[in-house]
Amino acid sequence: MITASGLSKTYGSRTAVDGISFALEPGRVTGFLGPNGAGKSTTMRLAMGLDRPSAGQITINGKLFAEHRAPLREVGAVLDAGAGHPGWTGEQQLRILAATHAIPRSRVQEVIEMTGLSSVADRRTKGYSLGMSQRLGIAAAMLGDPQVLIFDEPINGLDPEGVRWVRQLVRRLAGQGRTVFLSSHLMSEMAQTADHLIVLGQGRIIADQPLGDFLDTAGETRVLVRTEDSQTLMAGLAGAEVTLTCQDAETFEVRGVDARSIGRRALELGVVVHELTPLHSSLEDSYLRLTGDYVEHRSGGLS
Ligand SMILES: Nc1ncnc2c1ncn2[C@@H]1O[C@H](COP(=O)(O)OP(=O)(O)OP(=O)(O)O)[C@@H](O)[C@H]1O
Image (cartoon, rainbow, N blue to C red; front, side):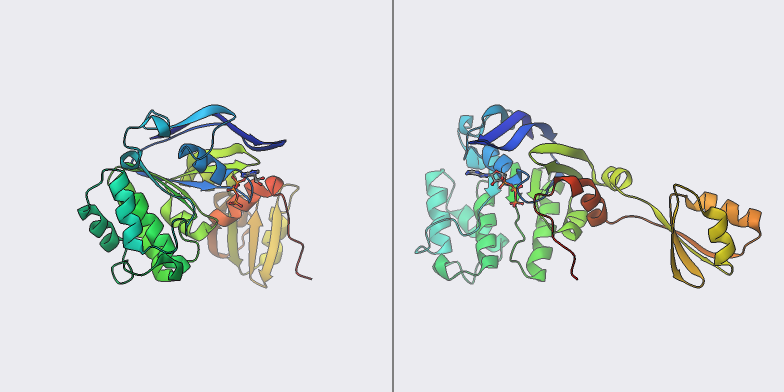
């Protein structure tokens, strides 16, 4: 369990995290989303005791990180791939970490195998690809077999096989009853991995809800209509709150009227309908709609 209460962090005049509170339950993957600079990494660093809050606190299983007698057995984190001594091999790094946290040596081999690093574990990490560094970071996080895992952008730089591996690992860890806190900018991955979402905008929580509820509330349902007489049906549906977008002579999309009402209207008008399909928003659509006002640097159009 990770619990934040009134957590704030300011850097000079810059407020990175602005009085946030949340409780992350075990047994599920909580996705952490937000535009660049929203405060996600800062929150994760505060959880790991790498920075001090300006106000409030964030605890792991009821205690501050520093209050745990064996913190790596409570929480593992991947916050910065590539951290560690570049002149050491992956295995040396894990052995040192294990030795300094009273973790048995046998566990080092286990996490090396678990993360697919066996063939490169005896190589110096300065030669590691980004994907190997990510795997080494995950191996280090898993070393103490902790109940809580914090992953900041763990799939950055991974190839498709690596991305799938992280997705399956994260789901398995939650399935074992662990608390998993995961940030990523890749919405398609988040949609497949997270059970619950916390969305930050400029240091504040703008959503904290199950993934399905987030898609329902932040999303916007459209309906695809295919009919023999699109002119008549479009005219019959037109209204102030309704948006109609023509796709071809027989097909159009409707926003602002649900499929049931469109079906009824078609019956009243005597129009034959071949298709009436609600189109649910993707996580990306919902996320972009919700966070639009919180983006610091917006891109221009392509033309
Ligand atoms: N050590 C620091 N000193 C000064 N400002 C900082 C520091 N760390 C973070 N910030 C600022 O705090 C804000 C939040 O940064 P943070 O890295 O937590 O955002 P983020 O949501 O993780 O962004 P991204 O998606 O780009 O990784 C940003 O404006 C950042 O510039």
